Image (cartoon, rainbow, N blue to C red; front, side):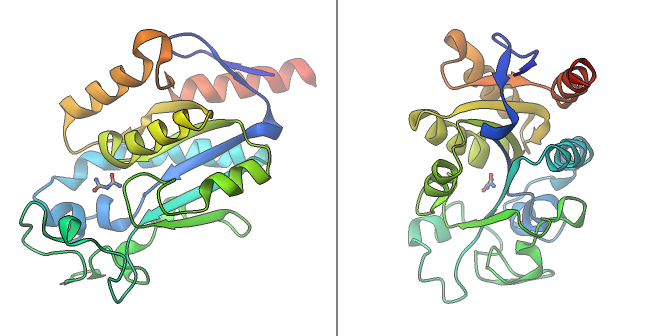
Length: 227
Ligand code: C5J
């Protein structure tokens, strides 16, 4: 068993039953000219999440974990886009409009791609989702259950939107979730703090919060003691 120092108490799992979730590390959220910026956000606030997530991704690959990369986006004909989502917030550009990285939040456009630093490797699961939560209107639960996954290590953007929605959906389905605080980010520092506080409050009512260093140390320590 791997025991990771976390809040509100250590998170334990074994390699066979854990998956790494990388939520929506798409150019549309992280790079200038994408959907995130069209809503008036400073996307540079998310960049610090990439390097620690890359280290966690490397470790997950070394240990043979299931890795799932999600992408928020819509079909090119926008048939899976509710008007409520398209029009909310009166953005300068709407989902489906042309931006500097192609059509905003549309599958197949440049902006919809995952940033190159965290690009999926062959054999990893890439999951397209039309909503904020990764379980809504996808086969994620089936994929995880088919592999016997019970524990999720969660990274991604943004903390209080797609990460929070996904962790709550996962928690209600009985998955144990560890969110890595330096591998998730928000355009709103106060929402980032609040979302992390909410996960771990009340004895971990939604899940656990740790850091990439906590996880990597636990993996290294376990490797040393078993070798
Ligand atoms: C947002 C997401 N923020 N991936 N999507 O609209 O969090």
